Image (cartoon, rainbow over all chains, first blue to last red; front, top):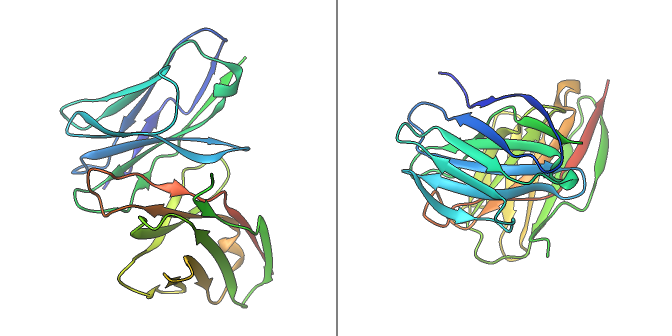
Amino acid sequence: KAGVTQTPRYLIKTRGQQVTLSCSPISGHRSVSWYQQTPGQGLQFLFEYFSETQRNKGNFPGRFSGRQFSNSRSEMNVSTLELGDSALYLCASTRVGRTEAFFGQGTRLTVV
Amino acid sequence: DQQVKQNSPSLSVQEGRISILNCDYTNSMFDYFLWYKKYPAEGPTFLISISSIKDKNEDGRFTVFLNKSAKHLSLHIVPSQPGDSAVYFCAASPNSGGSNYKLTFGKGTLLTVNP
């Protein structure tokens, strides 16, 4: 069974640009969550999607957005990139009714 | 306001001995607790979880203990192996996969197992 797949693995962007990251969950998993990992703040929850609806959102500015498609695949978008957005962005999928989240390898975003 | 705290940034143990990683939480709404292991440049790997209705859960070399009154949990690894060297994250959720689902993580403990 394939795990959670995130693309791309690495990305370098310039301040002010926007970026879209992609996540394919484990087959059969309908909940997809996104997390940001930075050295100073650790792993922080961005948002969670289930059946194409955002069910929960963390404390991030509106520049961070996401969506989920009918096949459960998800994308997150960051607009007007800032240097502080440099981080490892992790996607996780979860089975219905379960709490264990299974993570992808992440996308390392560097903003210069 | 850090709701999940791992007060030891690092821990070093000898191969074959027990590793004990600790975690404290403040939010009484947390109902489900998980431990993850993470290597650099990789995503966290799920290790073991425990529901608030239990005080212990075991899976091979890994055992998680939950003390709800103290809002404290710990992960025991016995025996420790050099391959266990990684950052360990404690995480908590208010419910099991419901509409309020999200994981709140501690900042991690770097475990080093010396041969």
